[in-house]
Length: 130
Image (cartoon, rainbow, N blue to C red; front, side):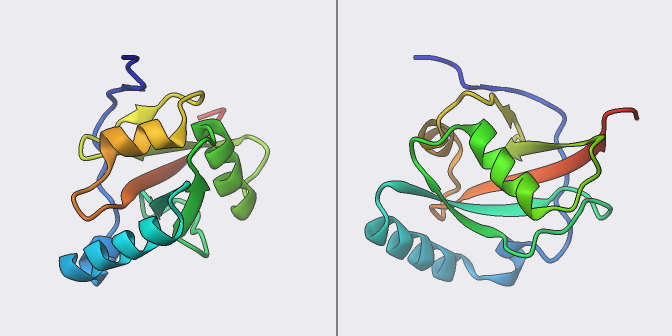
């Protein structure tokens, strides 16, 4: 067994999150439907960690199970309009851990999926230069 995550500071998600907007039963039903239709993909809900983070137009992602976290971050970054000096960090699970870039999304999902069946991912954009 390989540890794929390391702990970081817990971050709060912004108000209006997917969980707040959708009742638990509907989320369970939705994730079950997605997993049965796309068994080779990971259903992710991606939300900004802070109010000043760039907004993604979509927050639901179906990520190939064999994709790495780094590829997933690249896909998220492509949708944002960031300056060259900005980087994107992602956090998963209740403890808001930062997954290792080489970890497979299926491993991250299996270790951090929510009880409703989705993998919740928060992101934060940071400047390289502070």
